[in-house]
Length: 299
Image 1 (cartoon, rainbow, N blue to C red):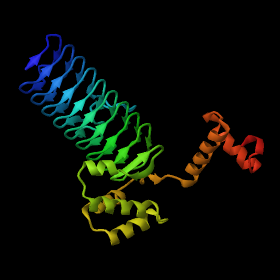
Image 2 (tube, one colour; image 1 turned 30 degrees about the horizontal axis):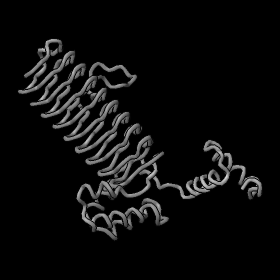
Image 3 (spheres, rainbow, N blue to C red; image 1 turned 180 degrees about the vertical axis):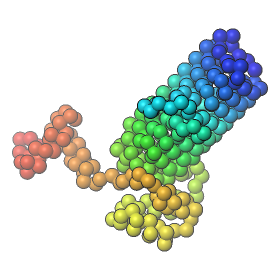
């Protein structure tokens, strides 16, 4: 072990071989840290936290602190972290709000700077969570998901396997597996790039795209679409998608509104013609609706 003299390490903490602890890091009572894990300067590993082998906890990261809840509780649960996870600068992960339970993080995940994982979350493996993303309590992120920067995820939401959430999005419903979500809980398309990188076959990708069209473009409601999916597909990928939808408590993200994006397109065309500032986009659309057609002088 290589522990800097200024680090504060509890005698009740258990550190395995080849652990490195940087200057001014704090490791509290009951912490367990696996082999070859590196704790950088000013990081805090707090009570009831277990970290697996080959992890990295960078400058200022805080793992296992008290959950951010108003109710007063005498004791809280644990934080369990698997192997080969990377927590970059000032990332925060809170332990469970319930005695005897745990916030759980799998293996091979990457948490970028200022990302936050709240109490009682379930984070799978091979997940990337980018800078400034906030995941609220009891949320679940499934394997191979990619969540871009400054995304907010509501409590109890689920992010499906191999899905992608675009930057600055708000997730208030469950994100189905294999889908690309953008904006306010809106599904835009299949996460084709992610599927190719995961070495999905051409046949599997085509089935997922067909399922997407049936689910979002057929005009059927969710129950009817699921029934059709069960009739037409028997691949394990589609079965996983169906199972995810059937077990959704918050409902799944909807599809983008064609009418809304048609207004955006028309507004952009008006900007090009009239050279008006972008902030007047919607004001221009409202004027068009009231007056009918634009005057010749305005075209």
